Length: 101
Image 1 (spheres, helix red, strand yellow):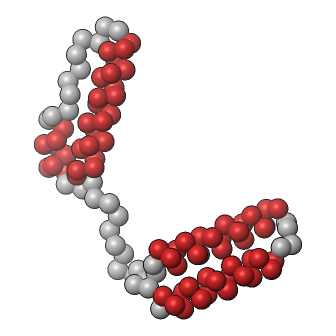
Image 2 (cartoon, one colour; image 1 turned 90 degrees about the vertical axis):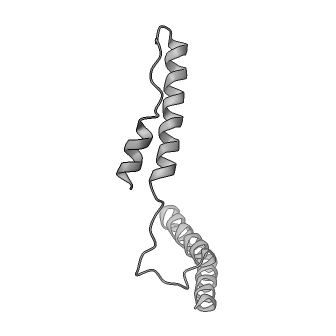
Image 3 (cartoon, one colour; image 1 turned 180 degrees about the vertical axis):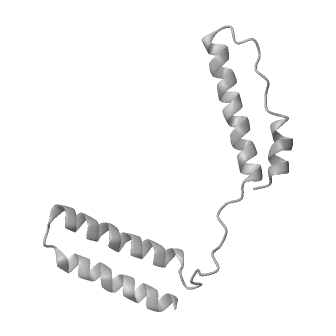
């Protein structure tokens, strides 16, 4: 995060007008939140890429792994014995990972 940029942007945050009614207070708060969100978007970087990340880990692999984990949790919670569908999803995950590598 660039602290100097945050401090420079904070100078331009809207000053409160005479907050005599609830509507004026709501409008000011909405304006202030939007200004802060814009400042955050401009100064705070998104996630950095990890040096230990796997180059083959694509969104397709991520979606398949997520699908398999979600199904496994649902089966564990419901104690359903539909393991055939889970096996199919596991095989799909393995194929997707092998294809990506």
